[in-house]
Length: 319
Image (cartoon, rainbow, N blue to C red; front, side):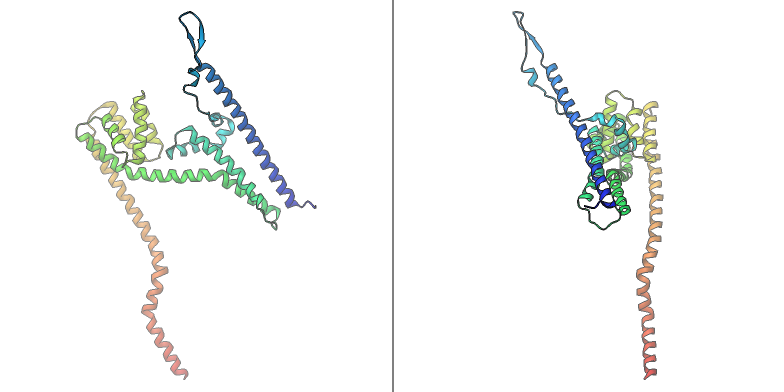
């Protein structure tokens, strides 16, 4: 069998993929062994001792059967050097923006990125068709590797952009509800609690973020620290200004109705200017569409009879 450059490239890529799979399997096996040893230690600790009335010390076998720990996931991968490189701070912010705050979601993102980066080139090798040059094969493998590595981030970015748009749509309703609850005599804390619990079906994103902020506030954090995530996560300037207003009212006291009314008017004016800008862009786009679609029809309707008359007159002259 002759070894062509394309065959050597295919074999080298296959060996590289096999080596990566073996390394991943070794890491998973080591983590499973560590998890089993940790479970054995926890079960041994949970098996407490019982002192009988006659002074004999016995172990209680029922304690070891209660509250058995679940299988621990290798969350320490996220804090390793490779984990911080594969799941950077930007990726973790995207996961938070998608509403997935747990470390489990970050671990799933890490494993998905690694598996797709390896499986896509390996799948291409399995179903490879002869006839391509070595440079073309290398470019295809590199493109598949990049697609598998960046695909999960692109999907998260898409979902995060959709949630940011929903935040922009929910913000006027958020301001109106807060102003309404303040108008009936409720405090700021009561208003935020009611909005997070009773209006979560209309404030899907802001209600979820507000529930997290209220939970952090009840655990001892200040209102400024608990609302910091809401102000900085979704990169909305109006929302950041609203959070700054709420923090100022909570710190110095006073009524919030008048500031909320002014902020609501400014928000409506901002949305009105955005709508005018969108309408202007749509007008420019529709001009091109009208030129490509309506102009030929207008030419046919207006100049069509004239062309037909010219063709008939030329035909009669020829006869």
